[in-house]
Length: 241
Image (cartoon, rainbow, N blue to C red; front, side, top):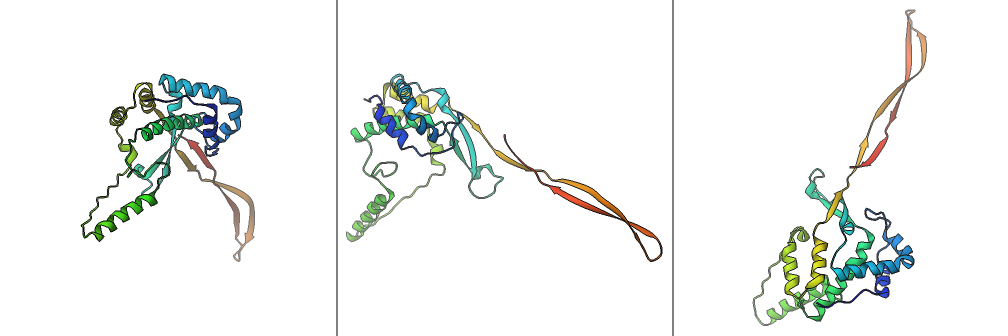
């Protein structure tokens, strides 16, 4: 597999089209900060990116992710009803897009993908897939042919991907040398930390005696009436586990 080094124009274009977000990974550097600082760090960033592509070694510091579980639906006490969101460092987005561009170029050049592959491809869409399916069905019906379809829906499809099988397939389709090693380093020895935001509500009831008065009754007895003021304090504490 042939590949080329990253250029200043390519990395500037990648950074330009990144979505501006205020959230960042463990380094707390958001894409917004990356965009603002790009003119001052572009030279060392190019050097680092090309060193990664050339050596096939993916830095361990870029494999660290902060996982935040987001509730989807159903029972909120069931952990399977939460969708994990990975917060990664912004620099990882740049390197990922460099790897993706070179891998996609290799796939297109060697015509590896079939024309029926509509997902995750530029200039392909679900509308085209639907049109192709309907067109094939109508053509068969006009020719008095029977049509049938098998539809599969994989739950948590990306979690089902076997990394060894994926690497073997990449090698079969010509991904070799340092580039295959780079993808292997990218997929292995990853680190993550799950961050859960817990809101603890503490109720503190404070009873304050304001005044005591004496009220005469009809039989001459006196009754002391104590006026109390009940103050309800509800402080909320949020902390990370």
